[in-house]
Image 1 (tube, rainbow, N blue to C red):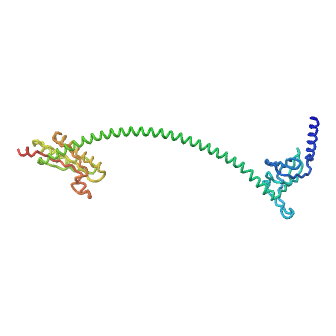
Image 2: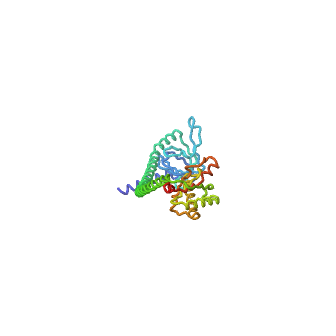
Image 3: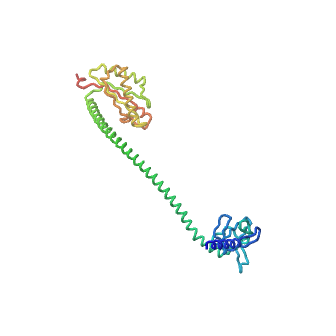
Amino acid sequence: MHSKTQFATLVALISLTSQFAFAAGEKTEVKGMIFTRTGETLIVKTGNGNVTVVLTDSTKTKDDTGLLGLGSDEMSSAVLIPGLKVDIDGTAGEGGRVIANKITIDGDDLETSEMIQAGLHPTAQQVADNVRRLEAHGTSISANREDISANKKGVSANREDIAALQQKTAAHQADTAGHEKKIAATMKEVEGATRRFTALADYEVKGQATVKFPSASTSISDEDAEALKTLAGTATGLTGYIIEVTGYADANGDAAMNTKLSEDRAKAVITFLMQQGGVPVRHIVAPGAMGEYGPAASNETAEGRAENRRVEVKVLVNKGIAGQ
């Protein structure tokens, strides 16, 4: 029984092979439906089986049009898609292949095949889209992980910033406490100075001089130097005298800078009185720095500003002593 089956199968194969045993170079015709296509090769499904059809540069594709198909339109081989019915005129080649010379299609059938393809491609397209979505999702997950990592770093950095801020706050509080102490000490000095200068109201002016300065300068002119020497000589001849020194500046420039400049001018005069006038420091009232405040003239003119760049020096003696 087994031998009979093998014999029947062999006969069938010989019969099938004989149907496609084209002689090389022999013209042949293949009718059927394109089953699949790979590049220049078509697998055409016919009533007798599958036939391999090879496309060449000289292969022409046309669509029969008009009544009874008497007209024709040439088309690109790009229309040869799976599911399309074709009528192929060709030449037999090696291995049972057919070299296509002319391929005739039906336009209506082409539309049907395209619709079939349209139904098939979305599936492939959906797969491709899904792959892209998965890749995008993977990228998104990776990005999220990076964001999470970055956020962790950010949280860590924020904690460090908070710790640093807490340290700065503690330092600031300490500085504030220090500033408060300094302010309290300064207030005491101001109160002391106020009492001191208020007490000066009980003094009589026994001599005075005004030292003028060039702009932004602390240099004492020769003329003013002689006036200071004379004033020092007058003071040292008195009992219980003090010398009050107050510096000023014009309104040009920054107010803080002018205050410092007025202080430097007062110090320059004090240094001169001590070194050149022989006045002991204990007889000199700590220098007053008025800056641009208390002008002697208007700062709107050059002459007025020249009057304001000055140091006022006064020799004072207590009235009780002066009355003795």
